[in-house]
Image (cartoon, rainbow, N blue to C red; front, side):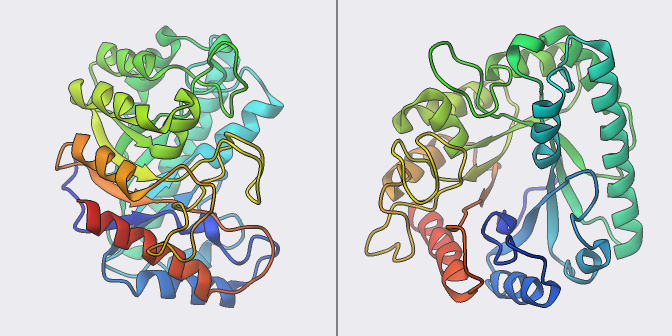
Length: 316
């Protein structure tokens, strides 16, 4: 297990002002404004088959020391599963699992290259995801994948499985991957040092109840595997972020303390307090909040993110 982080991780890419078109100068201004808050220890960075979706040189220039990185491969995994339903580390189809392992090897090499370019170990954690959908997946193939992955040299980065929403009978999933209990079982059976990370919104949308997120926390903590916890919101109604129970990373619910929040988000300060109280003190924390489509303004997006960090400070 890597050393605990001294601050928060921010998945700033979810609220980027350049979603409608790549603008490196605007993106630099945005990330600099987010990182100006000294509580930010690092960024969650999306891996879409490459270190950066547009310009790797931009990333090298905009991840100055001492900022660290948590790399998530879900922006690559989920679209690939949609195109190829048997793709994933937990796939019961050997060809689909082999393809996912090949992509994981490319991710490993990207971590090494990023460290070489930066001249330091910048990646704290790599978040892997146990696709495909649960009806195409199993614990046994996931054990095989984790055992092999743990034997690779990740250049000091810690490997975790981030739990996405599981396939639940009678409800429409977002990802529909394996249940958390199966992911925990696979890690335990592999005998590796992999951990688990959770996202508040993804657990809430799977369980269809924001008050039950602490159940996932208890499962992972009792297994001794919980390494990190990200706060994203979710809603049970249609609104500006999309349909009900979408993995849309809603901000906190709007209030006097969340002037840039979302009126119908289910994530509140009180529920964040409950989640943090259930965590091990060594678990690193972060936020990943999105912004309604359209516009390129920076100030309101940054204010929303900083308000969210204020909330975590208040409830810890």
